[in-house]
Length: 186
Image (cartoon, rainbow, N blue to C red; front, top):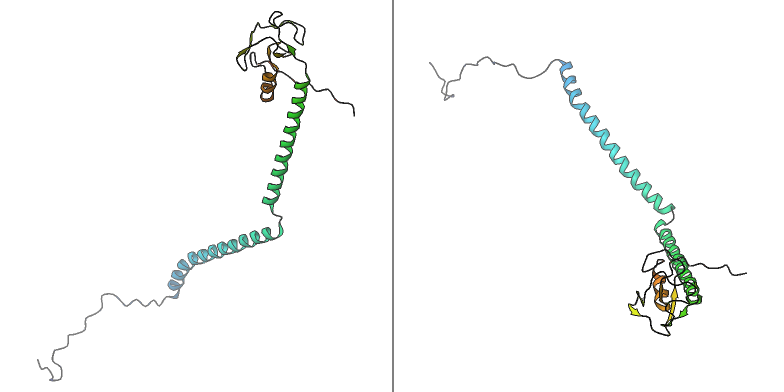
């Protein structure tokens, strides 16, 4: 084996390649690969564009609505204030009417010898109570008392007036006690 002096090692003989180099010569294969990767890419880009368009549209509509529409919170607050004011005024008016009616209603002066007779209904009370169940004090001679018209239970006038300001029922039997107001001539 003669080796030229310029080459330090002998060259190996070239071997045949077991696999041919990957250079597709068939153009249909290239298009098939591009189509398979392009379809998901196109779908992805369309979804991105739709999301961006929606974000801009929502932002524009919110801006437009805020600029053009009246301030609904302000109107809601005004409506709440009006309702509160009118309901409070109505409550005060009804309370005043109730107080006037109860104060104007006749009471009677308790006399221990007569018992509870002589109340405004003219009948003896249905319950024989010797004291006011609201303040838990016994009736004394000279106390101004009042009997409820529906059940004829008797109480101190001041006690029953303050009770009926809070509740429309008898403190003993819970019977409904309506306060009737006559219409005043105009």
